[in-house]
Length: 89
Image 1 (spheres, rainbow, N blue to C red):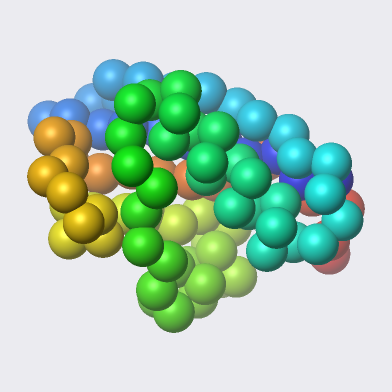
Image 2: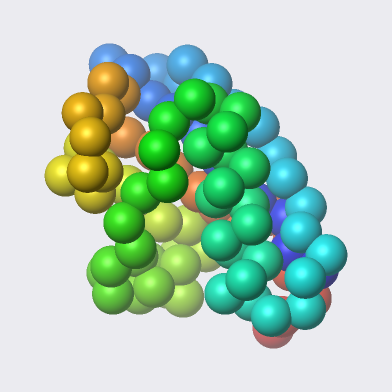
């Protein structure tokens, strides 16, 4: 089980935030399910995942997506996900 907190920022302030819990046992599948949930809730596209996001999540338990991580125009400063709870160590 994995719980993520998703946040959209504009001008340094949180403009939208939500949490979602995935019950999938595979960590990658759970992260994708959470990101897809936030994309639908925030009416944004699913961002591209790069190796730097994997590193950020491993080191800091959070990953930040900037406008360059989206194919279409992204009207926010950044999208951030943060692990709140995880069955993984």
